[in-house]
Each structure stands twice: as C-alpha cells, then as structure tokens.
Amino acid sequence: MNAESLEEDESIWYPPGGILIWLIVFVEVITFCMGIGSLVYDKTKNPEGFLAMQSLLHREFAFWNTIFLLTSGFLLAIGVSQKENEKETNFFYNIMGAIVFGFGFLILKSIEFHEKWTLGFTLDTSVFFSYYWLLTGFHYLHVAIGIIILLIMILNRKTISLVNLEAGGIFWHMCDLIWLILYPALYLIR
Image (cartoon, rainbow, N blue to C red; front, side):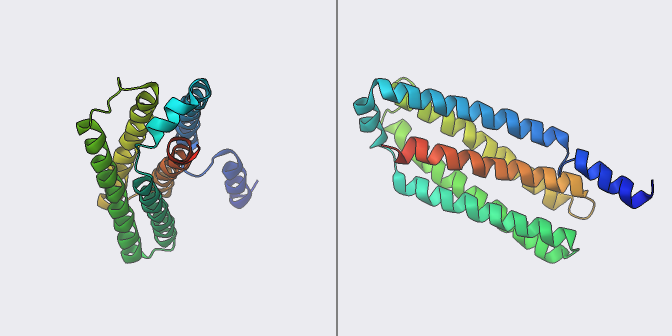
C-alpha cells in the first residue's frame, strides 16, 4: 500500500477535526434537542401561558443574534479556507471578524438577559422562563467558550495544526446549529 492510498484510507475513518469533536457535537446537539423537545411538550400542556410568556421576548434581538452568529460562522469558514491556502493575513482578519460578531451575539444576549432579570423574569417566574434561562444560558456559555477557542486559534495562528483548526471551527458551527434550533423554538413558533 503506497503512502497516498494509506492517507486516503485514514481520511475515511478520521473525520475533519478528529473523532472527539464529533462526539462532543453529538452529545451537545442531543442534549439541546432533548431540552427543546421537553419545551415543546410542556408547551402543549399550556399553550396560552407559553404564548403569553413568549410574547415578552425580543424577537428583534433574536433575529439580529441569528445574523451575528451566521455571519461569524461564514467568516470562520472563509478564515479556515484561507489558512489552508496559507493566506495568513486573510486568516487573521476573518477569524477576528468571527470573534467580533461572536461578541456582538454575547453583548446583545446580555442586554436581553439583563432586561429580563431586572423585570423579574427569572427561573422561577414560569415553566417557559425556566426553559428560556436554561437553554439560552447554556447556549451563551457555549458561545463564550467558542470565542475563547477562536482567540486561541488567533494566538497560535503560526503553529496551529489543521486538525485543531477544524475542531475549533466545528465547535463554533455547532453553536450556530444549536441557535438555529433554539431561535424558532423559543422566539418564533406560536
């Protein structure tokens, strides 16, 4: 077996970013989907109450947060491609752009959190707000960790391996995916 066919054979069994990141993604997506499934089930028990609580959320904030995360994910994908093509300056600027949009998400979500908290909408307010705080708070934590990962990518941009670069990108895109499930479940579906 020559080196090229061995490399092709390994790529079949070794996904981009490595096995561990895909196991993490699988567990996280399943966890969030179980939480959202539980939310949807509980909503069927009290649709009017959930609708009343849902109407207190900022749909505009959620829309802009979706734009921020998708733009950030797009810039990250371009950045990874630039790194693979050894365009270091473009890589740096695209990852920095991804970080800026990620911070935009956190800032806007913090404003929403602060407003809800000061108005007295806490975990104990209702079943809906329990879901709201747990699901969006857990996602917020993931985005914050994702930004730390992106910062580490920037700080180690000269020596970062392709596998680590892909793993960081996959984690960030997982945050996008989870938000794309949370956004309609909490803010849009009536």
